[in-house]
Image (cartoon, rainbow, N blue to C red; front, side):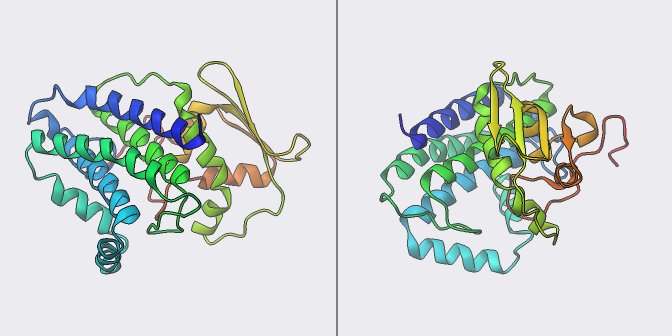
Length: 265
């Protein structure tokens, strides 16, 4: 199995799980607020549907992609939130059907993308495998938002290795987002998978390191939990700083989630 197929299979499974959570909801329950400020369940699914659709446009429709870029340039920081809010006004059944259609088409489009060519995006262009990884991260993170909103327990699976990998690979991006110079040296990252397996990145003899549960690391880099609530250990000043600013997603870092027990108003 190729890397792309592996990620796409996990993306489909993650989407299936989220779909099983939202399908039984009433129209009123679709308006349940999530921990993401200003987003309810409907906004979340609208965002996922729109983003999957945009990936298809980016991969297959150069003229359509250029038009989307022009629209985004008009409101670069608010474009994503605005599109989600606008789409979320549709009836729940229509939203669910739109997302279902988009996410089922996405794997075929990425598999069919010409070998060696990258898919254009709002940030740097990405290979189909990297794009699929980004879509997995987004789906998983927003799935947690829905789970939190509905009181559902999201059992961790080893599918999160894609989020962990993205979190490690975006280390220097996180520094750049905060206008900081990335450290010259690589860190050692050792994470304990939900299955008990150990996942590692970086040289064995690195002076600085991050260790802990992979699930906690994924929560951190997607800003779904505050660092104070997670069991991650940093060795070295730079590694410690990284855990304060880490993010696996594009765009501004935002305010993140407050520590447990802190007022959210």
